Length: 194
Image (tube, rainbow, N blue to C red):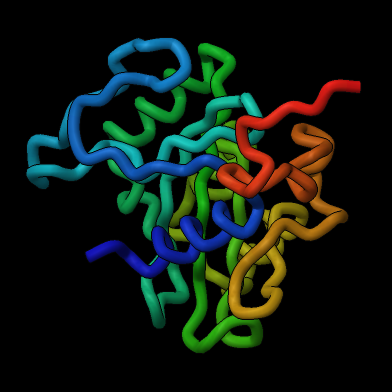
């Protein structure tokens, strides 16, 4: 059964017309034919990273984290293999993202979500994470919360699901992310002569 955060991400991808697929073992990239990754040894039939997506024609990787009722994101929840995978693709100029949900209630008031570029997340973790083992959802003492550090990448709840708000920096990277055409709509594959 998929984690709630994975379901939330998959629903958002569908809403935004992002091609999105959860791989279970060794696969071939649909764009270039390259072998992508193998199964994790510790969990049969589960990939290292949750999703490969295409934002328009741009490939990206997304790892989803967060469990219902949890208000902390332990750093260790992102395994060394996942960190290496996301970083190695990022260093090859392929986008990598972390999708996180935190909260002890129902969205939107009791839960929040973020879609954060991996390089932004790792910079913040290096800066804020040196004296602790997890990110709190909200500020705890002198430690800023996830909601304060990543406020620019916070998603909004619209009609039963998360979406990217029009003020998000994601639109600077992907200007058409909110207006992508349907993947398999009535016009799919048809051209018109002018």
